[in-house]
Amino acid sequence: MAEGISVKKESDLISWYNQVVIKSEMADFSAVKGFAVYRPYGYEIWERSVAYLDSKFKSIGVKNAYFPLLIPESILSKEKEHIAGFNPEVAWVTIGGDTELDERLAIRPTSETIMYDSYSKWIKSYRDLPLLINQWNTMVRWETKETRLFLRGREVLWQEGHCVFKTEKEADKNARDILDFYKQFLEEMLAVPVLAGKKSQGEKFAGAVTTYTVEAILSNNFMSQAATSHYLGQNFSKSFDIKFLDEKNELQYPFQTSWGISMRSIGIMLLVHGDDKGLVLSPHVAPYQCVIIPIIKEERDKVLEYCSQIESKLKEIGVRVLLDSREEYSPGWKLNEYDLKGVPLKIQIGKRELDTKNLSLKTRINNVQSVIPFSEIDNVKEKLEEIHKSMLESVRADGKKRIKEESSKDNFVKALKESLYIAKASWCGTPECEEKIKNETGATSRLIPLEDEELINEKCIFCGNKAKINAYFAKSY
Image 1 (cartoon, helix red, strand yellow):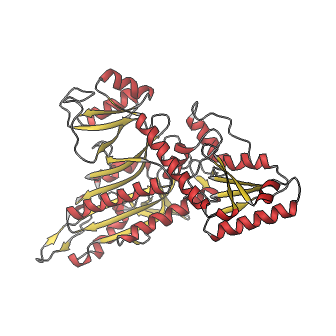
Image 2 (tube, rainbow, N blue to C red):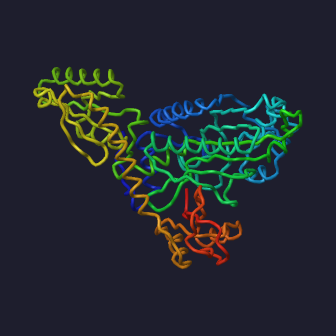
Image 3 (cartoon, rainbow, N blue to C red):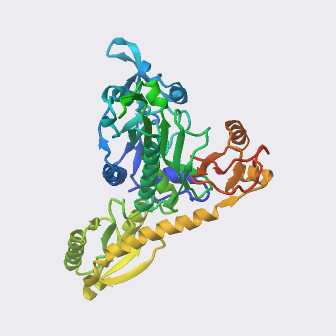
């Protein structure tokens, strides 16, 4: 195990983050610039995330499929706004073996185009709808910004759902329902509270009518997009000539959605919960929910036997547990190691616990210590639920303190430039105004509330024109 974290989270969030991810053995850099290696400890968290979300998607009838990694340029370019949004980041294959290809093939930046080419063949009648398909795959976008493990990379592990409906109402409901699933996942599995809303016209997905988003609040007053769900209207069905005969035997263009979440969500969890000791993992996704650390000063065999009994009982009641019986490392060293790796609960067992048939517990958050008898070992599961709830509520309370309604342009600009707080303000909502805000402050609108709200002010916080909406503004990763 590597040495501890040498950078304080509060003083340099990104340097701290990089150390935590590497030293905790979550991920590593690869020989290919911008591409990550996800180590078993980090990948297992993704596996648990996949299992949760896959079950949610299937509960509403979504089926998994797989489409090609490579997309012909002629297909990728069918939806003009879409390709314009992705073209700067597309990686191309131009040679196969020693043969130059007749047409460039894009390495999947997202799958709308290749999937919708198939949809145009499959959908003929209203009886073929709704079509609900998801894929778990990777996508490649040739990021020119600095890449960061989990948060931003050139290859991303994610899922992308692409659904087709007869009506606008059905499609928009699907986009919102999926956004609810994402919010539930982030809060119920990762203990990351998020704000749900819509993206501005300037920030929405290329080709979408409406982009819905969930955003997390970070400790440096940045916000981070955790997942998005897009209502596409008929933009793609018209571009790809997807039509169906309705009940009146008339041809119609269907309405579509696309939605996705990636390993970025795990990076956000690490940013939100980690501290100067290292990771702090939610018990719901942690590879090990608790670790048993023997304190062997005397009666070695009996202490280890008692530890094994505890391990067996915890496994029996469904707790993911690790018994660390290595003798080449001291108990203190192990305690620091599992703090760095974010294990939610540590159980220390020595002669005293052996004699009293107790368990000495210590939580990763707040270092809360307690003692329970072996006869009440089932309470460990309850303790893990308490840890998750505490993590969630603590971050939610902290996030509320970081948001301030703003009416002064000068304060607004200063707050965004210096990341003093997340500013909620009334705004005109135009891409032109947003571009000026971004150029002056480095911040963008992160989300617009889902439901109509009373305006904070009648005039736009920045340009002074008539305000139309309230919006949250912050810098982001």
